[in-house]
Image 1 (cartoon, rainbow, N blue to C red):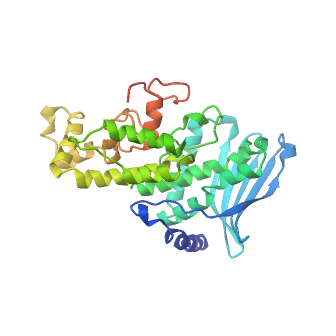
Image 2: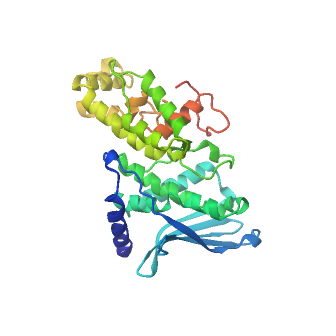
Image 3: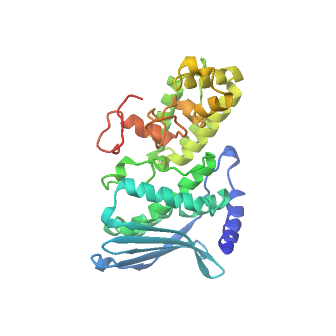
Length: 353
């Protein structure tokens, strides 16, 4: 494992020193340009055990990452490796029972994998890995025909990508546990696996959605205008992007607005208003300041959406009790699921945003 850490540290130096200064308050991924080499793909025997693997190599032909998937009638086992000193070092492994496969089970499996990865890799190492695997699904799509691409063994890479990006979000949001919300288009096989927070969306759609939030919401008469987020989305106009990166930029801009544009008394008033809805006013004065602080959402982005309870729009991963984590992807999902349609998951609770 020490060899893996050394390799990731070397990659981190290259990637992180090239990060754009324009968004220095957040972490954006720097593409590692390369190509895919399929080294085993038994497409002719799909009814039997299938061994599938590929190698990602940089444009100078140096090999960095290998992915393997073995599928039979009952299970799908996938593994990811990084290369160090001519040796492939395992970094991620996931076993799926295909007989009991469901979106809920897959989300739980990805969260479990993410939490285990977080115990092994620090933030810079995670960013390095995500920078490598971020574009691999597209490279595979360009390499394979449509039928082969949408086989389970090929799509297993999405589970590992989701897990690593969940760890990245956890580090960025200073959250103890990794999160992976249900992405509605994965429920019926219309899409490969994504966490809701990584939902692919067109840049102009995200721009319009965020602009609507900025236009309609006020904080003591003050308007939040996320200019860096707008600039980022303008740069990718016409392209499909991941909401994770957009959310991190938006989150950091709102934190700046929260701390710099709102006075301490205004922030305290917003916090107090949220807390009073959690306990009766007669009991509020008897609760210690320490416990009062525990009542409010710890995630400042929750105030952007006005989410303080688990069932509020924008809150992720719980439908009852206080809200502790919010995300742009969850807010967009909740707004689309106000009436709990076909793709909204079994625990959806209807209600307006």
